[in-house]
Structures are given as structure tokens and as C-alpha cells.
Image (cartoon, rainbow, N blue to C red):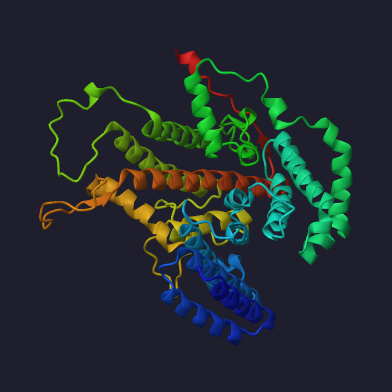
Length: 493
């Protein structure tokens, strides 16, 4: 790696940003794109170039006053989108053999960019790492600061008051640690806010008074036990992969968060109306949780050998995998899209859109939900854009064009032939081979990615309902609040 090369183009990038001149920024972008072509064999250099390109487009977005909510007017934040895409490309260049010095900056800026699109759950994932305040690295201060502010904001949209309290408590602990290390902060804005911003100063004082009432997550997990080690292992796996439908799993992976307690938020209905929104959400939640277990089994379960015997399947001699595990991957993957489409129907009904052809796509949300001034509709819209493979909007630029492969793969699973094989070439001629071929490792990674999208969408939907209900309580008449009966599966045994 040529350190001098990186230093030179990084300084050129900084000068362009400091100039505030769009023409100079565009020229620097052009130079970096040429440099990327010349150094495409060095992934560390490429990741740093991509990081710099993202910074340039972020600055350009600020100078042109882009607003992500303008999708409602068919005006798209092109520069913000490109900034996010370049960060994603930079992350994709990072592997177990290549960890660039600016990894934390790339990760933190990815979170900041996602947060700009109101994708706060996904942003929190990238802001979460072990902060080392002794390193002269802005990411170690920017990430906890931005995460704390976001947790505070998000706390007001959680349906469980205790969750809201713990989100605020986590925000307090992050801000307190920054205050204690404020002399090491090089970022002048954060240093000033931590020391002097009235809202933060008052919040820290409040936290000092309240912290004695909060038990640690580890303390709350004490005494939690399960009948079998299998259940414990499954719940730990869900926690570690942030797959529980529980907002607490986003701030802790201890056993106290190992429950799918997310419900349709408290809402106002007409007198005599049943809990049908809550029940519809339960069906969505149940499907997600059962699909998640299939994913766990696909990764971890050892099926009996007789299940694979005497099927008389044809071998294509490319190490094709017909195992029960791969079939469970496929089923779990397809169920995620089923969950998203059902979520779109629930959104369709709750927000009284009543469109018979609703679907979880960017085009449907843009056409039918553009009247909803709700930040979490923004979240759902931009997340759906990641799964869009075809869009006829003029000048359309998808936020994550590579993610469209997920929707395409879903269609292939449903209607075409997908062969799971680990060998890239076959000894046969392939004139009649119409299969889409992917490896088992790729199938596992994209299925896990699909689950993260699905979980985030479910959480954004509940936040959108909570946001809406804040207005419904004062705008609707002759309404009542109900407490639905909780289903107990053991009663059926």
C-alpha cells in the first residue's frame, strides 16, 4: 500500500471540501474516479478512495440543500444516495485479510448516512463498537455521540415505557463517557455540545439522579434460564445477530432482551371494533419468528441421513447441494418477502389507503404514502428502495443498487431454478443450463441480510404507527383504547 498516495488524495479531498466550491468538488471526484481505475488491485487503497468520494458527495449534498423527504415530490437526494453507495462499496472491500486504518471512519459514516435517511435501526448497528477514547480518531467520539442523540429521539416512539427509559439511560451512559473524556475530543462541535449545550447538560444532570434506579443489563439477566441448552443456544444466536423483535436487542445482547415482545402499538379504535390490527401484526410477527428458526436450523441443524436417502436426484458434478439445510435457507428467505408484503398490507389498512394491489416496493410507497408526513414512512420508503430492481422514475438512482439482487433472487426461488453449488464451472456444455447458480455461503449471507432488512422494516412500521397515534388521540372522536387478549399456545395442547 502506497501511504504517500493515500495522503495526497486525502489532502486533495479535504481541500475541496473546505473550499465549499461545487466545481472544485466535482473536479476532485473526477480525479478520484480515475485513481480508482488505476489502483483497482489494492483493496485498501480503493476503500480509502471510496471513503473520500463519499465525503465529497456528502459535502455536495449539504451545499445543494438536499432533503431525503422530497421523495414525496419525486425529487431524490442524488448526492446523499451516492455518498451512501460509496460507503457501502468501501465496506465491501474490507475482509478478514484487509482492515484499512480508516475502518471506523467508514463504519461511522455509513451509520451517519443511513441515519440521514431515517434508517435509525440500521444506523445503530454501525455506530456500535468498542470506543477507544485514547485513539486520535474522530469516529471514537462521533459514533457514541450520534448514537446517544438518536437513542434519545427514538425513545419517544417505543411502545413500552421501560424500553424508553432504558434507551434514555443508554444515551446518558454514552454522553457521560464522552463528558469524562471531553479533553481528548478533537471534533470542536461535539466538544462544545458535550460541555455546554443546555439540553445535554440538563440531560446529564437528570441521568446522574436517575442512574441508581436502573439495573444493569447483566443484573437483569441473572436468574433467566431455559429448560434445554438448545433453546439457550438459539436465543443467544438471535441476540448476537440482532434478530429478536425487541427494541432492547439493539442496545444489549444479554438474555434480558431474548424475547420477541414487540406488539402493534397502543392505538385508538371505534367502539365495538375488534383488535384486528394487533392480530394481523401478530400473524406477521409469528411468520417472521418461525422463519428465523428455519434460518437457525439451516445454519446449525444436522438432519438425519435417511431424510436425504433414496431421493434419486441428478448430480450436475459441480458440488450441487440438495440438503435439507439449503431448502430451509430458501424457505426462510422467501418468507421474509412474504412478511414484507403482509406488512405493506397492514400499513395499507391502518393508514386507510385501501389499495387492492399494495406491495412492499418503493413505487407503491411513493405513490400511495406520499401524503403521510411521518419520519418512519421515510424509513420504510428508503429501505424498500434497497430492494427495488426495476423503477421507471425519471433520473432514478437506487440507494443500494446491488441489493436489488435480493428481490430478483426471491423471484427466481419462486418461479425459476436456483442451483446451490460450490464449484464455479461444470464439465458440461451449458447451453441448456438455465439455472441461477450461487454458493451455499452466499445463500447464507444474503439470507441473513434479508432478515436484517425485514426486522428493521417491522420496527420502523411500529414506530410509524406510534408517531401517527400521537395525533389520533387528539383528532378522533368516539374512540376507545382496548387491551387485546394475549394468545397462549399451551392452551391448545
